[in-house]
Image (cartoon, rainbow, N blue to C red; front, side):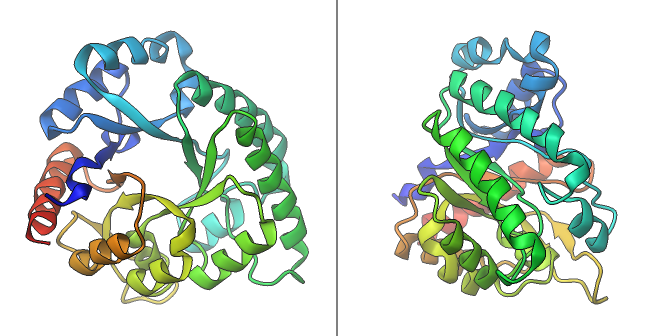
Length: 278
């Protein structure tokens, strides 16, 4: 049996739960028991979400990794997210740093060993005036999580694989890795996902299973689609992960449309068929 079949999980935020019980219900419908957990509700609404570990244990659900967002992100356009995303903006840095400290502690309480976030647009050249600033901020967050024994994952998206590779080589923090999202490479117009995966493969410790089509209008978003209906070559993607001896979880993410449980369930069924045939 393909070992990846035992490594399927769901990005909890995709299901838009308002409580741990909502999340458990939707995971049961999808028929998966592993979740990449949204850590923001644990910081913002602990009265509700502190009950999650006991409820997960009761239903045999395991949080395999986590995610947190940064303040003030605007995804209305490519230019807006380039300007507001991650830890780049000075106006939101103090709040992001404060939130990250709480999140690192919460992740440790949940027993997580991998937590991902969008660092923001990574400058392509060390000569860029934002390069040193972003390097310092990512390093501070990385060491915050390292102190808790947690690997920090930077998600792919706003930069090319070559730019991300160069940034991580300069950063040189042993607990910083990549959460690779093949759809994001297409949504942001940053090249072929399989080629990108080969460039940054040694850093990839987690994957988002998400699909998309490249935009036909330069400078605008591509279209996110149900897994198996977009332009990601999933057979080649999983074969490449196998070549790279990928050690992590394959986490299904869906951030568009309003039938996300059904879409993720369909995506899981599609991926199982692909993996069973390999």
